[in-house]
Image (tube, rainbow, N blue to C red):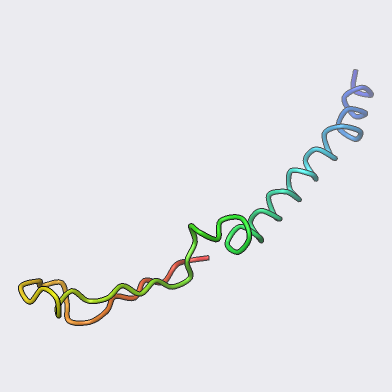
Length: 69
């Protein structure tokens, strides 16, 4: 019984775990640039509404949002 479990771990489970780890690390490396390029931004600058709407109290300059990659 233990021999069969050891054989299962060596022949089937460890390659599956290694393949999963490889695919997850590849996805983590490539997702910001290749796979999710339209959903991920390193920096986003939004213009101020103070010039177009003088009653807005949001601020007097553009907003800069830094995205965490």
